[in-house]
Length: 337
Image (cartoon, rainbow, N blue to C red; front, side, top):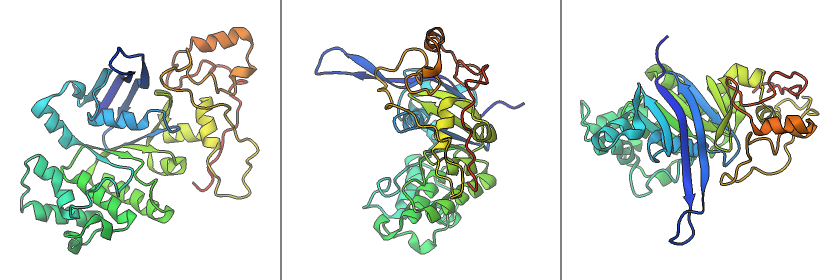
């Protein structure tokens, strides 16, 4: 079995809380001990509520942020330690498609110049010239050559995102991080962009890290899914494992909240979590999900204490995996998703 393209081990990012010029008063644990792998030519989806650390994880993988601890191994080399020219060379291999296509483009820069920017930043002169390479990329994402000198305000949201995808492909990267790339688009355009990303992956063998809130999109697009909560991974598995047989109560609650396209679908088993997401500067002890877990209140005092000492078991961070009566919650079915 070949080694994974990307191997993340114990990744953390803590931001100090400062008031004035004094010493830090604490830390925000935005990412707290993530470990996962990404295979070549596959798609890993990071899902979870807002504030769970998905976008911070993306910035760490891009090395836009330096990890507090842990390793990010790309082909076995720790990119968390790269500096100077080695870091610049790494950026050729990992690119990003941003959530808001309008704000990710310079309104004073033509789309041709925007797509060419990575080539110029890396000092790369493609065969046939930069303009020819840009026109090839524009054609690949469904834009016409006459769009080269137009500006972002002349494009629709879907077209702007196609420009962002072309820019990410300019350096022929191994990994593209998609930070909610379709959330700002109309539903019909979302399908077009997702299909485009899949076609590009099939043609070029690119690996994706796909961040999303829309679980129906994730089910259609991802190969593996990591469910995040408060900077940690609650469940990790293949798409079928996570969607058909979710084992963690948090995963089950997320899936049960997905709107069903079938109006006759049974919605009586929806799992509603109580309370708000705890602040990452003061996470609960032990299992970070225990303050909202629907199982926790059903346990006796001794077993509640066990939740405080939870450790991840396999690919699911739940202490009660061996008890079928505890995990007999609703398993939703995304009919038609």
